[in-house]
Length: 89
Image (cartoon, rainbow, N blue to C red):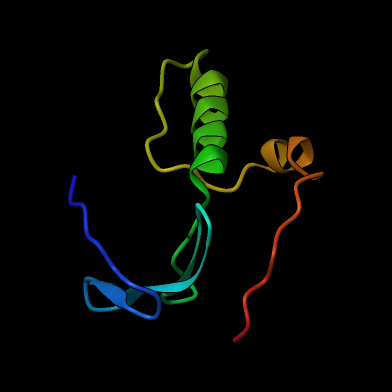
């Protein structure tokens, strides 16, 4: 794992097309801004883990493991009560 230190307003570049910016720091909470192509899926880790777990469970009957999850409707129905924030474009 690569660990970097950044100050407010500083950024890191991932590849040619993804930039992660430290947008705000409030106590122990850090807000990150992510600039990436629209085709890039960006997930909060806990949602990604839920999607992967459900895909693995659904594939259990066929013994197929789905490494890169797609957007399963059933996960979103379970997580529909979560609040999301849209970024400014």
